[in-house]
Image (cartoon, rainbow, N blue to C red):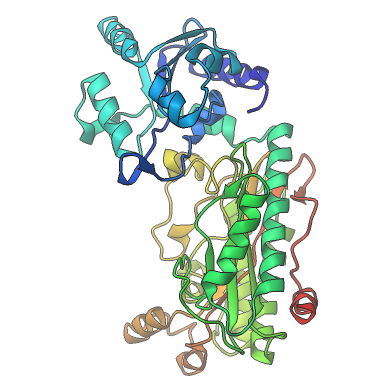
Length: 463
């Protein structure tokens, strides 16, 4: 946790923004894997962490906006809990760590909510993403569970986005710890991977470093020789000479702030000439996106810069033709880049994604429905304090190539005869994490991930 002062300040600001009502903040519960006592590693809800900071299951907070007062609800540890898990803090002790002076048994919350409903007070809650919290909220508010997402408080969502998207100095410091550990993870993979190893062996070494530095991974590790599959969590393949290996992995600190990096490197010691060409085209797109960063600029325009760079490279290779701006507007480039250039990052690796992209990524503006562009999670105007990834990639997806070719899509821009020569190439992605400052931007972290061909091959040759 940060100091209690941090959480008090955050709640005070939330109360000023909302003006009135009662906010229900549900913490998460333990989640069983295959029976009740054998649980997945516990992960607290990120909004609960942001405003309350307590990292234990079974807690709920009520923030009375009118009174600017927070109540904590939970269960005291039983003797069985102490026998199995050791001495536990009391509920009151937990509350004080967050600057909360009033705590109650979990069952007391029902009378408070019923009284608030009887007084016709506004009860703010967020869209629940876990089944047990959805069922609890349905019972507590006497609402059908199927309407909860529709009735979630838009004013609360907008207030939280307003607060959480601008990172404080102590948050940035924590994120940089996560980024530095993430760099260590990627460097270890570059030093470890070699032909004859399995993807799982590389992933295990990457995960070990995250755990050894006191946190965990911020999302399931992507470690694959099939980089054309955007989120590939299968780790059963064996690395072979000539393969490209794509690693997308990040660390999460003990305070649950995330890093998120991607690297692509040869399974052997050097890139082939063709791999080097595509890899450097990816780096060129990465630089185009980074060079577009500035406060006041829309991230959609940063994405456009990356896409135009990819189109230019594909034209140079003979895979595309025509006017690059027209190709972008019609989405022809999405054959090679069917996703977005980046996303916000903080307490979640895709920060606040549980609150919905409409406000987190778009400030209420409608998203594009165009293939590729519809997957851009973040498009809004950049502000000082925004933290996000830059991660354009180039992918040759055989199934997508076959589908678009059969449908004769974008004949003015796509050169199918040449594209067929690349159908088994795979995919590449390089990813770094950035902060918008008052006057520009900066790369996050005190350590830098190898990026250039020379830097990557130096690590591969030294193993």
